[in-house]
Amino acid sequence: MHDLYMLIEKIKKAPSMYLGRHSIICLQAFLSGYSVAKHELGDVPTKQDSDFREFPEWIRKRFNVQTSQSWANIILFYCEDESKALDRFFELLDEFIARNSSAEILGEGGLDVEQTVQVVRT
Image 1 (cartoon, rainbow, N blue to C red):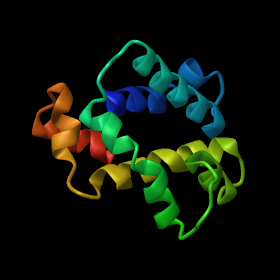
Image 2: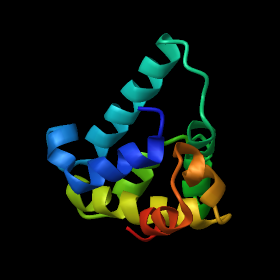
Image 3: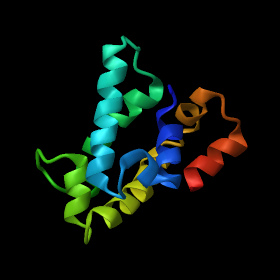
């Protein structure tokens, strides 16, 4: 799977299937494993991989915090529990992707404009 945002969209639709439970901490662990596996396989980072590396700093700015805490812990701090934090992550990711009209990044996997808009909206 070379399309990070489509993978995250699949996780959004069935989090327990991919993560074991509806948890932002499990998502963070999953995405860390995904990143390590790609690195170990020698895969060159995609535009989406590179874009997502900006997410932690974007979250810090979005919540106006200066901390070394992970993006997941920052989101969790502002939510009732890990489940609600995961739901909030998906909302924030949509906002993050849309920040610069990231159709080019989403289109990397061959999505047409209509599919790209659908991904951003969901």
